[in-house]
Image 1: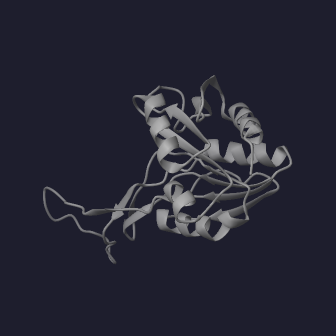
Image 2: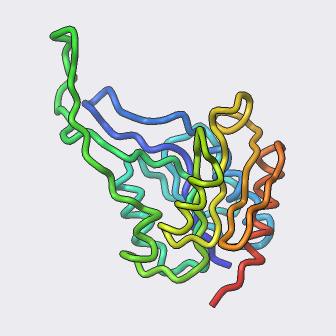
Amino acid sequence: MKILITAGPTREPLDPVRYLTNRSSGKMGYALAHAAAHDGHQVLLISGPTDLDVPDGVDFIPVETAAEMFEAVQDSLSRMDAAIFAAAVADYRPATAAEQKIKKSGETLTLELVRNPDILGSCRSHFGFTGTLVGFAAETEHLAAHARTKLEKKGCDLVVANDVSQPGIGFDSDRNAVLLVFPDRIESLPEDDKHQLAHRIIQEIEKIPRD
């Protein structure tokens, strides 16, 4: 299969030296890219800024902002059989980015934020993607319920959900524990190394029927 994978955080600039971001390390997305390439798939990795090495045999597009990731996905998705959206994309960005460094001037600072484009939510409706669609859900409560809602709302074939409030797994960690939420069932994968989980997730994606 030709598989597109997004990974890492995005950075939304406030001024030339500051930005809004999140704690995503990109490790899960890069592990998925490595596992998919290892299994013989043709992989395109679109990633926000990380400290990770691009896996061997993987095509790579670096991006920084959510808007850049949206554009890269839009340009590439039609050539793909499957897409896995593991990136932690910022939901909002500053309405404007200052051209010069914002100077300290008062006790408070108010930022106006605007919505970023919904990349996963655009795949079916806006991009017309008909291949296998996999989303990720990083939650702090009601894991299965929120993942099920995301699966149905975005038109996914699978949502991989993890509880990022649990210490020692998820963000910044080499380990994770996830729920695989399918339209007809939920399967739990207990805590393991992200590379081991990635191989299992790719195996499950390979089993999803394609048109």
